[in-house]
Length: 310
Ligand SMILES: NC(=O)c1ccc[n+]([C@@H]2O[C@H](COP(=O)([O-])OP(=O)(O)OC[C@H]3O[C@@H](n4cnc5c(N)ncnc54)[C@H](OP(=O)(O)O)[C@@H]3O)[C@@H](O)[C@H]2O)c1
Image (cartoon, rainbow, N blue to C red; front, side, top):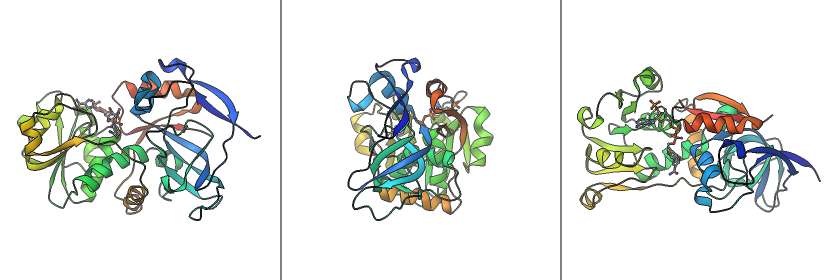
């Protein structure tokens, strides 16, 4: 049987538990494709799952990682949308294991889309999980409209920098929070205003908004609600605390990203239109996955970190 390299961990713990091993290459079943992975995006859920088992509730050994971009190597019975050689990207199977930190991966065909020609594999691997999170929140949930005011917290981060661009593409006025050194970057991706959350309390300088994207949670949630108009949307991708009164006044709730064919099509269309480009600030090789986790877990990343696989 053909073999492949993959990252595996035999126990929960720090970055040092990640190691490279060789395993049998998987084969696609009905409705699935085998993808030769060129790049695998790194997300906070990767290091959280490595450290705690995360929401998958499985004990090691397992392989983390969900975001991939690569080439279709084989198609399973019944798959008509892809052929061998097609370039695809996606966030398959989340929150079940996808084993994306590997040279090959098998997953349902419709958990991917064709990679936009504008993006390299490295850029494409940066997009699915964080991009779908922002898209499902801003487009599917809040249905952001031209002229609406959208506040994006952690606007220079993985979810935030894509949320800024998606909200702009929908015609919104976008305010982003980030440390001062990242304000020029926020302007370059289309933010209309930037707030230095370290120097000022954003609730004192942000006028009423229609929508908040909150990747911070905790006490940020109640403060974010305080700048929302009645009936506005508080899109929390990390659970936070909100009083019952505020829960009645605004649309609030935790959102968990889902594998999503139409969401992938939506992201691809924005990329093709030149309205959405992921920023990749650092790359690591597959055998440096632990270093990539350390860097992301420091919480200061601009855009995304990606593992290059070949
Ligand atoms: N529910 C879901 O489906 C879902 C999906 C994706 C992500 N998430 C979660 O969402 C969170 C964010 O993910 P991510 O990929 O965007 O993380 P990330 O890329 O690691 O975020 C890093 C950014 O956060 C900024 N930041 C940190 N504290 C901040 C604060 N108090 N105010 C404003 N900006 C701040 C940093 O900017 P500075 O250097 O300027 O501080 C940095 O640019 C993670 O906890 C992740 O697990 C949930």
